Image (cartoon, rainbow, N blue to C red; front, side, top):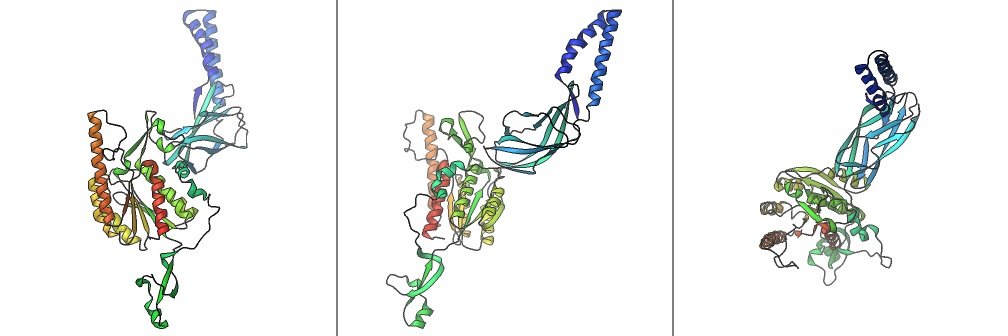
Length: 467
């Protein structure tokens, strides 16, 4: 604890100490003695009030939760409980230590008048979390006045509250509202689909048009007539999202302020109030992963998550349920771009060894660098025959055909910029052609359409029974 002069003490010092000091210095006799008397009385009262109230805050205890979960860009309240084991405090102030990743709502210093003795007082500190990730609240500060209100006693109490800030998916959920709400199908009927799935259903007589590969030759020999095996659509499939958080995942995505959606905190990741809102490609990858996890849960599939950079960081086997979704969310919310090159060979080997059952692998990786794309295409044959693979990335800002712009270039530099974007678009198109020869689909949607495009691809695979 440490004492701080209060306003009444400062005013008394101004009105009494300054004149008394002047009388002592410039006057002799009775005036000088009166000045000394004023100084002695002022000092004695100040010291007495200071010593008498030095233990006021020692009996105050603070209780805060060990874990606080929040969503980026949304207000959350930290519950705080105070217990005063000493005498009643007529005035009690408290303030939470602030950090750049948070914004305290309302007054930073709050009052409790009074703080009763031997009672638990519960209150809340509202705040808004500005960044995704894992953070810690380290201390809370107390303040009270002395008996004569001449001093303020302040105390710092160490706390250890973990704050987990998750991505805000509200903007993406609005775009996919038809999937999440499951409305608008009042007149439809559920029909069992029969197709080339993986689950055996029954044997039946051969019919014209049946594939010869589906004939069960043993049953045909027993019955002395052609018998065909039929399959039904699998009810449960495994879906894995593989997120790259190497150096290329930190590529910035910039949006003009006037085009940014109101309340879309994705665009406010690193904005400092300029003309553009800034985020990174990794933010879009994480949003897409959680959205796809929710859709897979509704489709009854098993969802898994893999993150990698120069090595595989996390590999969560496919499951479903709310607890599993929370496990995946806790695994990805702390991911940040690493200044390393991706090691695709180590990734493919790990996937081949640990994922033995055929699954849908959705890669969220940036292939705008030619060397990275070449390395990815060279290592993909290790798993592309065992699993069904989709690859998606955010389209670079200038990666468009040369003459696709609606507006004509206004300067020579803009012409060269568009020419560079055309070459980048051409390189990505060549990468897409190489992947298509391997049976892999490459999607290059705009940043705002990444979630929609990925979910659409997954549902098409689900409906066509390609897994």
